[in-house]
Amino acid sequence: MSTAQMAIELELISLAGGSFVMGADDQRRDERPAHPVQLAAFRAAARPVSNREYGAYVAQRGLPEPPFWSQPTFRIPNAPVVGISWHDAVAYCEWLSEQLETPIRLPTEAEREFAARGGLVGADWPEASDTWPTETVRASIAVVEHPHVPIDACQNRFGLYCMADNVHEWCSDWYDRSYYAASPSQAPIGPSEGVRRASRGGSWRHRIKFTRVSARSSLSANYRYNDYGFRVYADATE
Image (cartoon, rainbow, N blue to C red):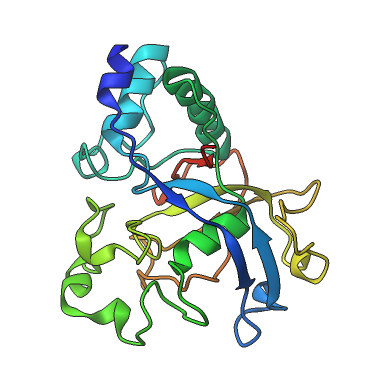
């Protein structure tokens, strides 16, 4: 086992896939129309990629450090790495695939929303409660002005941490705010081209720290922001 493999303790959670309703007709324009989607089984990392994990990649490849590591609050070992462009995230997935000898990738938007919902139907949050974002333990997270180490209070019913808070997470899709009107029902992968890449999840940097599971965001693939990280995914094992 390589040094990089020893530094990475990747916990991939198996999700059965199936049908769900993606989007929300009563929310923002780019979340409409709500539409049925069918997904094959896949696996999702329990947590976003951490500074410690990304550091193993940087060290082995001899790459420059992420742009915000000069600030101590942005290099907490087990907190999510940030300042990662879409291209950086894809390159990390390719490297990790080599290290673990299994294909690792970014999720589609559909997979990310399915995973964030945690099996709940018609819920805005990872738990079926209007007060989910403001309950006591999560309220303590909302005052932290940097990415936080994932805690149990942020888990959803699939065992995935921080699907509605912490950092924006890159998806593989191009972003198109009108895509849902033409999206296929079977394993959609987004438009064939675009200007920005899709992302999902909340942000420590925003005034409202927790984001609904159907909410969409996007950014130029070249940009590196201090609230943008990523989580790795993989196809299901046979």
